[in-house]
Image 1 (cartoon, rainbow, N blue to C red):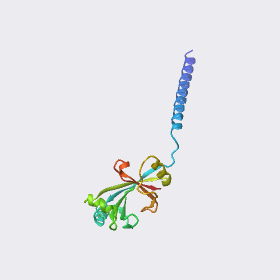
Image 2 (cartoon, one colour):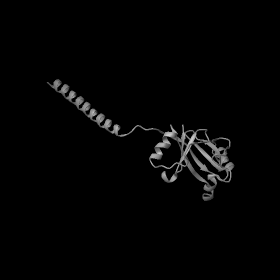
Image 3 (tube, rainbow, N blue to C red):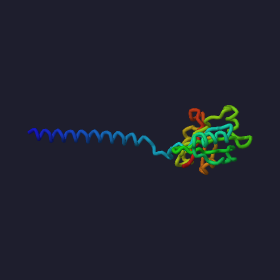
Image 4 (tube, one colour):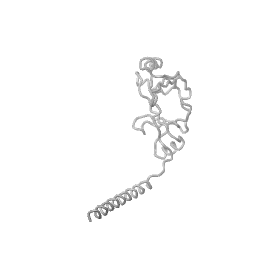
Length: 173
């Protein structure tokens, strides 16, 4: 009789577990039905951009003092900046310096004489879908079309007032 009770108790425990699991699956299926499929996906942090008043001094800090792998200076006339990338293993720093009188970095450096963090860049899998979706969600874009960024990929910037005070760059991965 004891063996029979153990078998029945074991069966009831397994049955309870199956019913409980079934309830969890049913409730999660209901939740999944309420969430639409994403049109695009947010990826990894690509880089953090830092505006610098002296590009060669900043390059020397990361390369000679901190020992990082640092790129050559890249002029990006379409964006009005010179840029240098500092490799960090899991991401990069982008050092920005004004290129020309109309550089957006000039205005930033006038307000922040010592330089500072300018923007973050996050990868997306489909920039056009991300732009359309964000517009529908009332996130302002700083351009109507993506531009070619420093990595040769499409990029767009989101208005900092819509992103908790942070200038966010999206780059298609």
